[in-house]
Structures are given as C-alpha cells and as structure tokens.
Image (cartoon, rainbow, N blue to C red; front, side, top):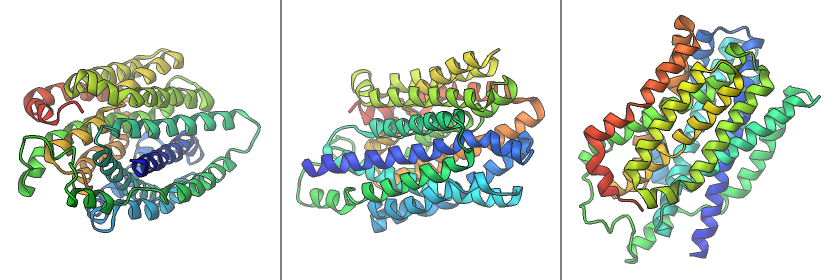
Length: 399
C-alpha cells in the first residue's frame, strides 16, 4: 500500500503539471490574437488545428498505453508536451501557429490519455475512488498556472519570458515525477496472484469487447457535452472578457484563475460527494451549475459578474469527466487505455473542437450568442442521463 501511495502522489504531480502548463498558455491566447490581428473565425481556425491533433492521437494513445505501459507513455509524451505548449505564442504567422497548435493538441492528448489510464490503474490497486481528486490536482495546476500568469502580466517583466521560464521548470519536475509512477504490470500481477480487484467484484458480468463501445456511448456523449463547455470557457472566456467586457489581459486572467480555483476545490471534494450522494445526483447537479454559470458569463454586463459565472461554471464542469471515466471503468470491468481512449475520443476531442466551433458562431452572431448556445448544450446532459444512463450509473455504484 505504501508503494501505491507513492504512485498516487506521483500521478497527482503529473496531473498538476499538465494543468499548470496548459493554463499558462491560455492567457496568451488574446495576446496572440491581437499580435496577428486575428478575427474570431481565424482564432477558431488555429484552435481547430489543436482539435485535429487531438483526433489524430486518439486511435493510438490508448493502444500504446495498454501495450507498452501507461507509465512509459506518460514519460515520453510529457517531454513532447511541455515543449509544445510554448510554441504557439512565438509563431510569426497563421500557418506556423496552426502547426504549433496541432503539436500542442497531439502531445497534450497523448499525455492526457496515458495519465488517466495510469490513474485508473492506481484506483484499482488502492480499491477506492481517486479520479476526481486527480482531476482536482489538474485544476490546482490550472489555478497555479493562470494565477502566476496574471501576476507575471501585472509586473514590469517581459511577457515573452513567461512561457519559456515556467515550462522549463515544469519539464524538470515532470522528469522527476514520472520516475515513481505505478507500472501497469504491477496491477496485472496483483490480479494474477488472486488479490481482489475492487472493480471486478461487482455482480454484473464483464462487458464483452464487441459491445463495450455501445455501453460506453452514453458516457462518451455526456463527456463530449461537458468537455465542449470546458473547452469553450478555457479558450474563449479570457477573449470574451477582453473583447466584450473590456477587462484587459490581467483582469481576464483573474477570471480564468477563479474558474480554475472553483474547479480545483470541487474536484478535490468530488470523490467524497460521489460516495455520499451517488453518481447520478452529482452528475445532474453539475449539469445545472455548468449551464447556469455559462449563461451568467454570456449575459454579464461587467467582467466582475463574468467572474461569478466563471466560478459557478467551474464548479459545474469540475467532476463531469472524472465521474464518467471512473463510472465507465466500473460499468465495463476495465480500467486500461481502452476505456480512457473511447471516452477521451469523444470527451477530450470536444475540449479542443468546441472552441473553433464557437469561434465560427461568434464571428457570425457574436460571442454572447455563442456562449448562450454553449450554456444550453450543457443542460442536455440531463435528458441523456434520463434516456440512457440510469441503469449504467446504478451498476457503477457510488464508490
């Protein structure tokens, strides 16, 4: 168990660093837009390049994690990711930044699938829910990265030095953290020795391979909706506050930091909330909060009101993905890259596909309408649950 505790702490660190690196890049998006004089549709186009990178890696990330071990894939994809995050801010043209965004999406999704796979394996080894907490550490990293960016932007220090400085630190910390990850073989060995697998003790039979996709489809749809909203707020909230509410880069960065903080606090409480109230009530409440918070952002007359919307939306979006990953793993009896890649293929791609779609809508109708449509979509998790997911969440249980 001591070994598992060490591995748990190391995968927490990987989640933290992934979030910190990504949120360090986010405040640079409106600056890149201004420097290259990009319209909303043009900005959506370069964000689409990142989405294409995500989609390109999804068919192979889960398979490689299962074949070579998630801990190895974390190691090497992380090296690429912490370099790729810094590239878009320094590209001189629309074409070059599109290629840089593709690399960011590809490497970031590769690391995302591998670290979630490793987290699910640690969850199986420890025999208790930890996925919401892991995503909480991602959000803590997001809060730290965004908060430090806001501080850096407010100080008389060249903004161009921000990303190279923080990413060099994150890369060094990643090299240290990945060395202590739990090897996938250790989980398989535990099962082979006859020790109980906490996710295999449910009374339901294991899902057959040919039907697993259909079983996971509702989980993937809800993940898509939740991650669509997360992608929109992550990539467009700072732009919205800067362009529609005249907040300036520093005040917009503070709004994103509030969003990240709300996500972190809720995710760190998520495992306890699921255990106490059950997966279904937590999922439905999350949908309502995410929708309401995004509507507040859309209708805000001042950026301080938008900050409130960011906080409510952060609470709502916080546990949707980790809840669905953990529930899908329990409902199928599987916890490897196969489950993560199927959910991530719909969910994580949405976090990158949502922003370019909203960019196109915003170019035609304005960002207020685009955010209102996103808020409406987030409410659709409720009918998806009512029509398809009641029984499956009961199978997954609360633990």
